[in-house]
Image 1 (cartoon, rainbow, N blue to C red):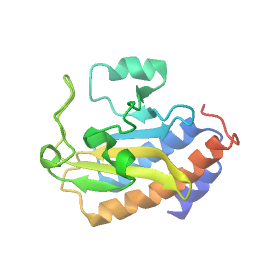
Image 2: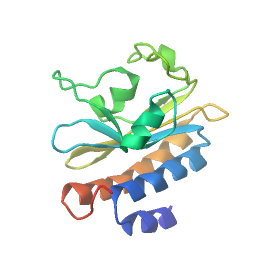
Image 3: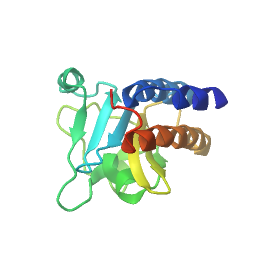
Length: 169
């Protein structure tokens, strides 16, 4: 984990850090899919800047350079994807459809069987999110702990971005 910390401390952009986090989460959890986002400091939108393609729209989002999920007027993202952002709690479920926050799969979205979501945060608040899905075996507390360590390091990068110390790209 020290190598990862050193890599992330030396990045020159959030995009570079997100690419590293994406690969690291997938490798360390065995996840097939991943989504790495920051919370836009201007409007609270969750903005994925590195993500697996789970819908037909993902190619379009990649061309745009982001997949933006607007923060509703209610101040809550809702659903399984928004749960860690809404609560600040990281979690996993090996039955996504049975999770209390689940409200169905968006049209055209690939169904996932196992889901892990991390609120990327520091003492000042929630800065972003990392989501992973579908490793070959069920998630467990060990996967969550490893992923939380990665999220803690990514939080340092996002805090640098919020302070204007590094650019988005």
